[in-house]
Length: 284
Image (cartoon, rainbow, N blue to C red):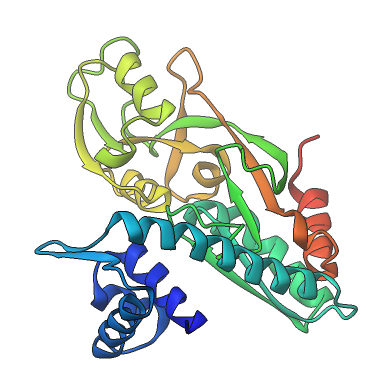
């Protein structure tokens, strides 16, 4: 068996199509198809069902997938162990966080870190996807959900208060009503966020005029007069043209957590960045 074919199996199973898997690992679609057929011939079983919607693992494929994932984890653990044994503050650090957190809170810390350690390249990934620490999609992750994986070392970093913001000079809404009040909310996929439920309870008669999963976009729309928005205070207070509105009770705030894989605990560049982040941002 060609061990590298198991990497192809993992990519196809996770992506669902040959094309998406090919883009994921940088190979051509025909090559991916040939490698999968070769692997199936070697093991003597069909590993995928070919459907109109893509590739679906068979029972034999599920068994192969489970073993392949364990092999992948061991290979990545070896990479992490070797990376953790470094002695020089140089190399790459992949950091993941939300868009507004990266721009408003983390960017100044990263600028300071870069001045202190110019040979370390920090790659900051800002989107809504939860990057995997065990698969080393990121080395250091900041997020609002606690980490529950046993191999992850994590800590609560800080509590972020939220507030209601309105374009400066506009008439604020009345709490408990909100008739005629336009709202800028999270998109439908994030409708379960605590601030969304809170503002709809406090302003039951308000109407939604815009949605976005990007907090900076919400803040900009608010500044342009599209509607009021519930924003993290570090972002809202730093956005020109908007001001806080008191509706009688504050919106729920959120905790931010930071985590990294236990295999990386000896990586000096990661520890150096984390120590600086804690010194600049942690609230206790």
